[in-house]
Length: 147
Image 1: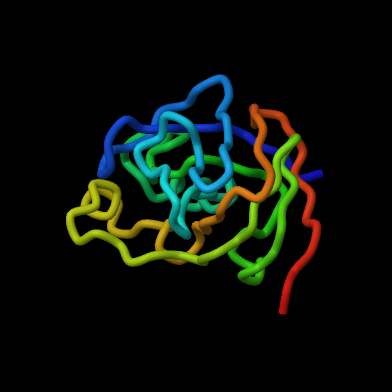
Image 2: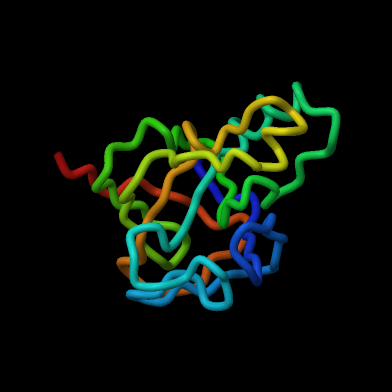
């Protein structure tokens, strides 16, 4: 069963995110209180715990939730294999995948320390389709993949 491992926010762009007990998703906005919120295509970032684990094996520093600036850490779902347009039910919310990966910043602290970063190739981005609250432990269900 796919589920949420951690939910994370940051006050400013360009910073690592920190775990919080829950996040509130708002339509046309993203996560209430997160620096990346806004009416655009990358309202929420998701990264599989399995991807973080591959980096942990290489890293001389601890890689806690939010270190790659991801909002939601998941387990049990191949995020990077989801087509753009896929809808995910996460707890009581629903999001739509809008982008797979992103360009890495040259000055990324993780890349400098470890030599590589997984967010550019394995992180995904989504927009809010249905509002609600997400907490660690919430189930994730793949609803549909649009061609």
